[in-house]
Amino acid sequence: MKTITVEVREDHLETLARTKPMTALAELVWNALDAEATGVRVDFEQNDIGGVSRIRITDNGHGLDYDEAFLVFRNLGGSWKRDNRRSAERRRMLHGKYGKGRFRAFSLGNHVSWSTVQADAGGAPLAYAIEGRADRLGEFSIHDRRPVPGAPTGMVVEISDVYDSVSLLRGVKAQEEITNIFALYLRQYPDTRIVYDGAPIDPANAESRYSTYPLEEMVMENGERVNAELTVVEWSKPGKRGVILCDEDGFMRFNALPRLHFRGFSYTAYLKSAHVATLDREGLLEAGDLCPDVRQLLDAARGQLREHFALREAEEAQDLLAFWKQSGLYPYEKTPRSDGEMNERRIFDIYATHLHRIFSDFANARPRHKRLTLKLMQELVHLDPIRIARVLDELLQFPEESEEEIMGIVGATGEQG
Image (cartoon, rainbow, N blue to C red):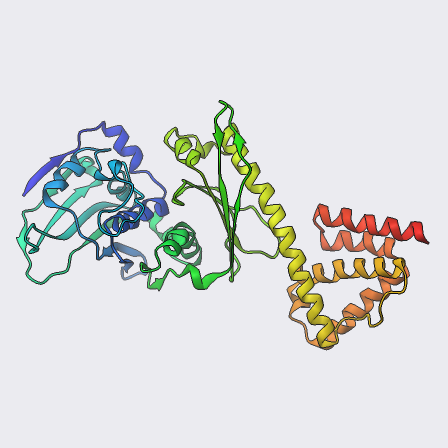
């Protein structure tokens, strides 16, 4: 057994070892994918009282070469991936470049081991292990190689003596977060499978819609011209939402707007730009709107998202109205005979479809209850559209752009009267 000592300042290692739990775990999964794994498992071993006692990340990649291990564990920033944009065999885009992932593992637990099987020049599988401890950060023990005939290549990373914060890595929100991180990658490489806490990450089946928009060229504060692209993934289950800043290859760098809400939609928006990687290297992403460049990127994302979801609301409203007409729920039967009747119907359509969107009790009600509610709303709009508009605005909390549209229709109706 030999000892490896990292050639970097200890305080820098301590900073890396204080990474957020999901960021640290994702780095270990990225390392497996960069090693050309097609299968990665993340398992949590429970103790007798239901807590987590151990985290295990298993992959079927090509493992880590023994001689290379001395280089990559000794030199932070000496990763082989810095000089390569794609993996050797499968030509995948590489995520890691600076060798930080292995140190971030210590933000999850005190003891970390890397057990690997890799093939020698003749194809014979050899196994060895590397161990490190957070209380001796920067010092690793590497065990001697031993032959393991017939064993498949790959890596098992085990983290034990875990910290309380790892509890954040389990549950529905953790599943959503890990799906957000790897959704674009798994879409790009569909032959790859990640199983997280017993459940496969399957963004394709969880998606309800996928849209990509090129954003207008932006001029940064220093005069640099920046191009960006926004990919909007709408999910079939509620809960996910927000804007994630990615580099040009779609690798997540920062979850910038985790709570940007558009009523009735569950989505993740990925803003992709080479400039994001530059800002990440400069440590500016976490400044958010306080950094002019980040603010400009996020403003562009917000604007495109408002346009996207306004269109999506209009599409869904038309589909809903068509269904109501087909099923006999729509209270209007005859064709409008005047502009006033047309405007009245437009006001009704806006309020009724918005009611369906924001009140699940109405959306899930029995047909006769829906028919009664829609008929009552029709009568109220017909009797006094201005008064009912004000009442419903207060109750339904309309978006500003919808209020402006309704007030315009009401004004036109009043002029005609």
